[in-house]
Length: 295
Length: 189
Ligand code: SF4
Ligand code: SF4
Image (cartoon, rainbow over all chains, first blue to last red; front, top):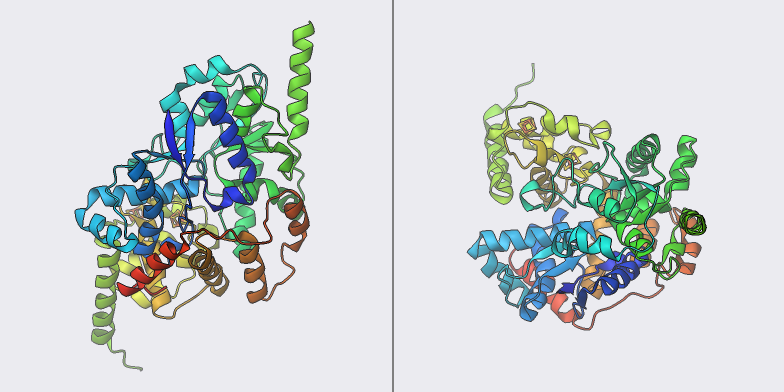
């Protein structure tokens, strides 16, 4: 299995551990990722608020490069995925738009190279069965709420999962030996850049999600988006201080949880780069497994 | 009593409405005002007009009121409303288009948010990618809050999460050309 790989800007800075764990896990699973050479920013989440054509053209250049190679594009970041998918669909829907965009990017893009969410690739192309056979450190007794965020499964006609009650990440957690916990905030929006640009709006949005995860009895949150990660992890203490709460809720990229279950070294997966300690819970998991082995 | 010139205001509203409809492809007349969009909107608590109210203003051609609202800036583009609307109105796309037109007309209800997105795109045009450190610094300096979130800086650098220098892509000329070509087609960037 081979895909073009579009990491996007966040994965080379705030979300660097998402990039690291994606690459390591793909390698362990035998999925080849060809990083699009000299990829450009897809414009999420600013271009679409400034100019619709620009919002379509920026992702189109990356898709066009993948199309030349005859590859679909695997995209970890939910925001980048949503923008790339929107471009693919508009180009497929309208010959006129296809022509306009190809003129703007000065490359050919016909919609043949598809934008695929990395989660979709793992769960639906490779399959849960194949993943579970490779698990050697199951996430036993780890209670995980899957946080898909707002962009991964919307709009419904573009999505690979149910837009209101998606299941793919929950099923993945189960395949990794963990315990998926149901909750009502799977697709609730974290406010994206609002926490930076207008915290009186962004912070309450983050607070609601963290509180809901806590109330659901989760040990941790799994996410597929670097912006969600920044809001829930980096800002967790800040938001907690504002509302007088101590959440102590580790947040993982789903790829990190995959890596742990596949037996990869948590440090090498980048888990030490989180703001809320996440290594502790992994250590506990391993200790419990050790006790089971000797028992 | 003050005389209000209704006909002229109506005509102007209709003109802007036509512009919004053409650019967004969203037909506001389809909305039957059930309020489901507002019920699910995660930002409704902070908006001066609810998503349903915005749709009503657009239906009535009261475009200035819609364009001057804070709502169109606070919308987080999460698509919850569009996903749930029983009339398949793409409200999120309407919000996005209203915002683009508001900016064109010089109605910017949320200056800081606007600044953030401008700096973001400047960074993309210049480097081909977003330089997050530059973006945050620029945003906080221009936004007159130089110390906001500064406490995250040192640990971010240590964790290898912020690079002091921008990543500039080699084929950056191509990205610059994309911006230029969009401008040639009338895009106001
Ligand atoms: S959900 Fe749709 S029909 Fe109902 S008020 Fe909102 S836009 Fe109108
Ligand atoms: S897209 Fe905007 S208006 Fe619609 S639900 Fe999300 S924040 Fe509210």
